[in-house]
Length: 105
Image (cartoon, rainbow, N blue to C red; front, side):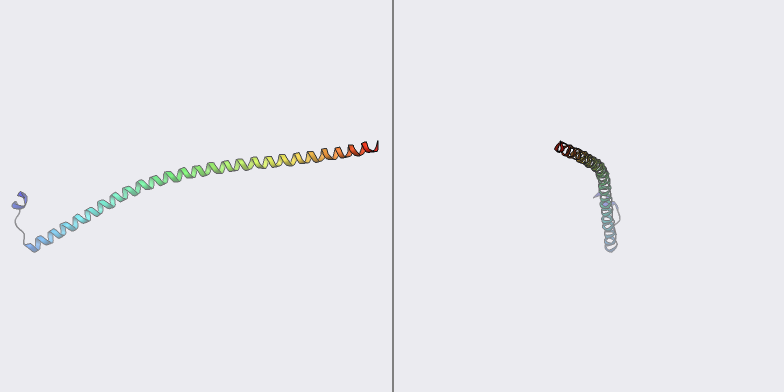
């Protein structure tokens, strides 16, 4: 190459040393670029996971609210059934009383 011709020739040992240093520098640069790329990918993944976690928290909160609402409804229904049972027992008692009165007539 024209650039190589314009440079003074280096002694072979010094050249090998510089080439080795250059290759080490290139390898380190490639490693750093890879690490930076990995960091960007990790940052994207972290952002994605944060969104997913937030969405799941919201779903869980919503499901908890639904469950509490259903539990309230079930408790109300049980209370209504118990009240109805009490009313029916009172009416049964009244009916029994009336039957006894009729039997005396």
